[in-house]
Image 1 (cartoon, helix red, strand yellow):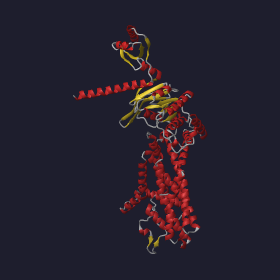
Image 2 (image 1 turned 180 degrees about the vertical axis):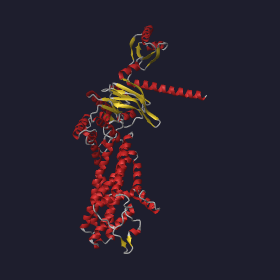
Image 3 (image 1 turned 60 degrees about the vertical axis):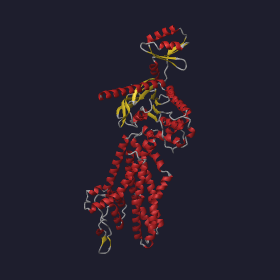
Image 4 (image 1 turned 90 degrees about the vertical axis):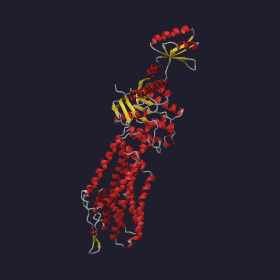
Length: 328
Length: 310
């Protein structure tokens, strides 16, 4: 199977610092893949490696079978950086035509595509204005337009809604939804606003400290994270939680501000369901609901990144202790 | 197609009225001042036509060599070409450009050739206006202007030679270094070395008696003067001995260092012609400069291909 984006052990080092550490990812054609991770995780570096602006220290990558950075790969790509920079003294229309022609389009084709994009993005009224007079939102839209100018098959968007107000973010997200709905473009998008990203993506790639943490379908990932967690509401939650906290089949039980019990199962799930039902009956309470807790992308992110952080701290602690013992 | 797109965009940037006017004014100041001085010092109106032609064209050739197609052109090459890549990188516009399906060599060459076209047009204007200014200021016969305009094609070729070589050098440096300041400082250093440093080097080596045909290969100032002569020679123009002596002093192309080669002591006047230092054929010097230029440009492009755009 030829993936839209595929990397094998992609690594990038800046001196002794490893920004991207042996990352192997695959992005299926036609999907919208959310590329998430905390600040400094290596998202932008990975994206710059994919477009060929940076050269990998190790590993390799392909864009629809073409090596990253090659002319063939770049023909298939449209890229919009987090902080797009333009020739400020150029007019928006002229800039887009220039970028189109740089991609090998004829002037007439670039002209027509520019007019379409400016109109579609709602900035056609500013076509003859110098770019330096553009607001941050308009700059992001212009950046999106330049990434789409040559009708690429794959879009790599680095924080396309960064530094925008809610209205600006919403507008960009609506534009992106429309692209995804109306064309078969593969989108590889990074964003910090996971709630927005969740509405857009169907796959997610999470990296932290330059390493791949998880790569999965969003729904499956959310199920996986929430797989052993349930929410329960009864007529007497206080009574039920006091019992659950004593049970060995319960990993964790706590009540939130909305008077809902969150329970994490421990051990076999069938046994858990059976035993908790018995306990509810034992409490003699009226059950309002008992359901699997649904996780959103943000909680998935927090859980996976948090686990990663904990593992890393534990590893650091073990290393420190080993060194201490060795020193003894 | 992509190369042309980058070239036309760069041409748009280079042909800004302010920039073009600034260069032309800076270049014409020297012919204006020297013509004013010559007007008050030389009695041109009382000279014979042959003498007028010889004297005025001599000054025209010197002014053009050092100024109109000389130092300001080299500095312009440095400021313009030295900024090609580093400016785009520092301003962040290069990231989007390199993400597009355009070869990095096309970006460099598109910009470089735009600079050459820009210089060709600016120099045609500047060299022609220099001749006209001298004609307007000095009380000379129209035949002197004819003689100067006859030299213009060769001078334009020389200006292009300077633009090609120093433009390539600055473009290559721009591809190698991110800092514009570093690029310009290195270029200023090389310019000083080419125009002045090697003159001192040659004098020192000749004084020590070790300026031999092997050392001459390293004397880039000599090769530049020699290349200039190949353009002047192509017009059939016969240089006056004073001009030969001046060029000999600044470029080592004539035996100007030895006074016995300049003056005929028996008649107390200069010889009609000073012996040419034919260490290397002028065409070979020209060829050497071009090879050096191409090598620089190729090296710069190779470095740019590997450059990381952050």
